[in-house]
Image 1: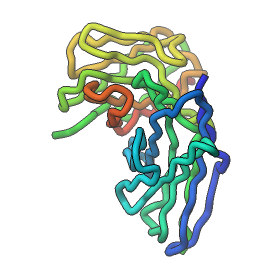
Image 2 (image 1 turned 90 degrees about the horizontal axis):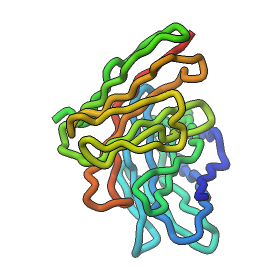
Image 3 (image 1 turned 90 degrees about the vertical axis):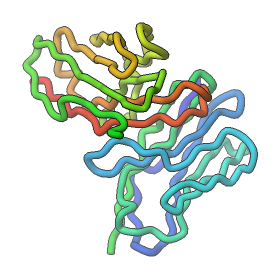
Length: 112
Length: 115
């Protein structure tokens, strides 16, 4: 069965610093990969997704993610974090049947 | 264009009571989903629907029922609520045109507490 692991439960980063969130998946073939963000008290919003082609994917709000097949990873990055990026971030995989399987999430705190 | 809306936003139930959560979408999407979110567990799929009149079980369906009588609405029912069903419930929808690469659009959530 497919699974998604987000090793970091909580990350604290200073405003203006770079951010990297880790995501590892377990699946036999190349899955479809997603990153969602959940701001406090809100629903989830799609940041970006990967399903083929260029392994570096650009998303909204200045985020990007890189798919590395050899490492089964799909890490999310942002060069310079803003206070509004404080949220919970979820990596998800769709193994081919349009249903999403989510990781446990990483909470990002931004300090001034 | 409201996207995905959920009713109610908050609810407190006593053990054994029943309730229905309503999800509505105005994007003409074919697929709709119900998830529950618990701390440290991410979102888990309860039930889903790939079209009007169809429903299917997800990862954690026990204790829940669903109905999709109209394309724009997806109802989640709890017949006899239990404390283990205390959670935040999210509804989502997707167009169904691109299968697994479709973006799912989420509602704002319903926070349910069962005492």
